[in-house]
Image (cartoon, rainbow, N blue to C red; front, side):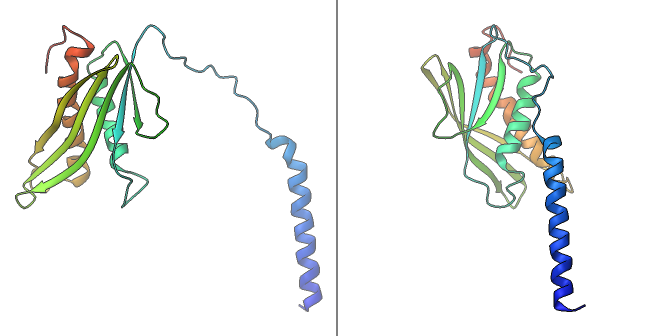
Amino acid sequence: MAYNEVNLFLMKKITLMALFLACSAPFCAAVPSSAPTAAPNPARPELAIIVVDSLPRRDPAWSDFNLIAEEFQRAFDVRHWPVDVTIERFAANNEPHALELKIFYQGIRSEFGGMEKRYRAWTVLTVNGTKHDFGVVEYVYMPRPGEPVDDMIHRIFYNAGTKTADLVAPFIVPTAPVH
């Protein structure tokens, strides 16, 4: 093909593509959804769990925040408390909540040559402006030989969430038994 033929071919291709996009634009317009959205229940108070952690360094698609959000939500949902649990990452524009649990995540340390995994997080509960400092919540896990790392990490965060929920329980439901 000569230079002019290639140029003409590209111009035709671009013209056809522009014509196609112009004709399909009305069909691609955003249509508001008619599906009902779940409104928060105004009768149930909200327990906001604010996670303070460093930005992910390794895999930003699945960070420690994601693990904390998933496993703590599961640990708190098991208890069927009369509150709606929401989990958010700490940011400068977070609004204060009447019932707020701040978790300053310090990481999981491997000790004794990997025989112990230690979760650590400084935890503070605020109830209507009154702070209850639980200090550093630690959970120690001893992995089984050959245990998959993903399973181990999920177990650590779930059990740390359970331990944190045990500390928070008397403030949420005063007659709640501690597990």
